[in-house]
Image (cartoon, rainbow, N blue to C red; front, side, top):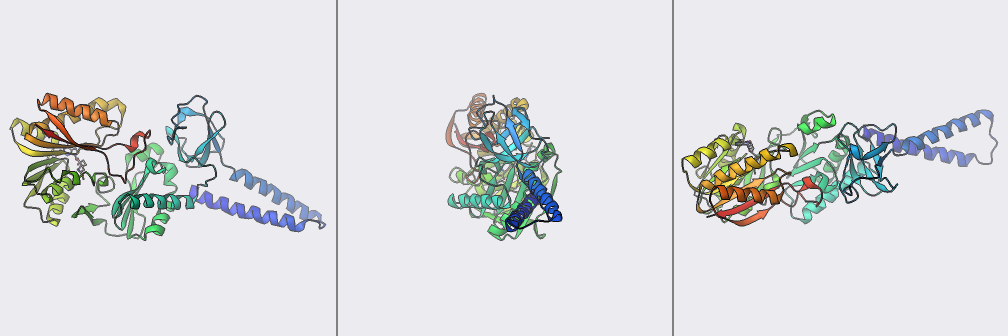
Length: 444
Ligand code: SAH
């Protein structure tokens, strides 16, 4: 709708131009009564156009945290003093601080707890189709500069100043998520940008995400280009992986671990490796490729295990790596009771919580699986462990691992501690942009 509205505004500006031109042309001539009625109506129309074109405003309370002034793009409903009348959900609006200073432009959704998400701090910048084309071109420039070309997260929402927009690039194929109403309305502009910049083989929408419902949006998925075969193959670190863009988890593949998968290269040589929460087997297939003696990967999803087996075959590694469907919590417990031993344990569970209320449950979950994992390791083995729960800070994650080591009565040494790959840039102060913790410890 906003998309259409912008077009309308542009049309109105053209009308206004024409009106101005006519007025100048008539100067100095005698106008008859009918003409003056026309002129009057046209002036009224002109005023109406100016009125409609004027951007609606949101005024913030005088006393709000410095967060917004310091660059955070979210404005919560309880931080707002007043919203102009006539604002529609999804509109682009201007935001002003309590002292009257301009804060930025963004999109509004009065139904959402996060009422505004800012797109720019520059008053001169117009939010229109071209804005999105230019922004996505900028994102691509950054990815190319940092070496993420074939597969990458092309747009990482807030970290790219495009709140709630995710675009993953899988070589010639693109997957889009628009997770708030205000950005959903600009989906056609994003598609146009991808078409202009990349000439893609296909674009797919993966908006089957529950968070959209908080914004009054439906969950949906489907083609945003001509239909194509959504089972594609990508290359990563010299290996091949099947990606199911239509039915895979999230956008089909976890690009954020692409550098971390390389980080296991040395520690898996000649090792017996167990990987839990394997999904399509990416870490485990890397382990086999880097010289592991044997690899077992487990996941609770049968679909994921089927794809993991296909991926092992695709890389000719099916004799080294095998996959089984199982609940990691159960088997890790069972295996540690059985005193099963291996050289490397890899854990990459899904986010354990999205809410502060259940953070303790997440902490307990991380402690449990890491403790079990450590118990499986021969002395001098390695634990490769991840956490993508953004509410668990890097410091907290390290503390949990320390607690697990203490309970397992094992001494640990940190080998590697890093985060998501740089195509998911981090903005300090915008919590959710730093979410992945990836740790390798030697367990003595
Ligand atoms: N390591 C993978 C990503 C893992 S995503 C990669 O880099 O591609 C997390 C996975 O954990 C999902 O595949 C999900 O099916 C699985 N999972 C969730 N709960 C589980 C459980 N209790 N036991 C085993 N697997 C589980």
